[in-house]
Length: 332
Image (tube, rainbow, N blue to C red):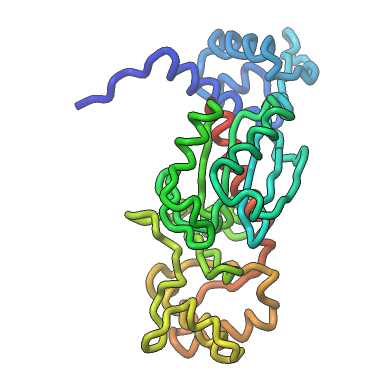
């Protein structure tokens, strides 16, 4: 059975997405360059660029040098035309960042999560931000729990959001596209997207956390969410007799904690063999990573162990949410 042909509206959205993505990636381009990159006719490119320029989406940034004919106009995307809103739950705070299409922060703030521990208070908070920034066109929300297509299915520390379809509720409430993502999935995506510090896109981002450990898993450039969207809930991994990983790392004995982490590293290596495991740099030092690697080699051959690195998790988390929010923005 063949797919039905795209509707005119769907085709328009595809073309707009391609133009926005290309201009943001290239920085600037001429009509001819966009036509070649996107495989679209020159008249089609001209038509859409005219519409985008009239709407304020485009900036003209000068004329190219002449190659014998008429000098070509160069266009850039107006990165202030649309803004994105990222909200993320972390520890006892809820933070927000408003960013433009270039990922530049325009405004940010933090409030106690005790003030926004239910859907009505979160909704009011978002409403106030939208009123002060009417050109916000997408919302990305990060939560410390498992998320199934916008529904929060496991979030022990914010019980008022348990089983809430946050995506559907907020989209209906504000008529804006919304993405809801697990914090560690966002972090591993952000780490990969903003630097690609390794050529191999098979990564695990491990976080011990105030409320319990979690992991974000990326294989071959794709975030792994699992069949029931429970991937990365490493607190449940069994380790010692009746103890799971979360219970094991709560031991005050530093050696026991290090051994529990090393066992988890060995388990992850044996199952998915990632290139790199990333830790929150607020939770480890280079010396500790060296000890974890050494201890992990007691459980699995050293040549198969991944690189162990530390990174700024808050930045990676936010970068991941911004990447998801930007994707929504340029798709509308």
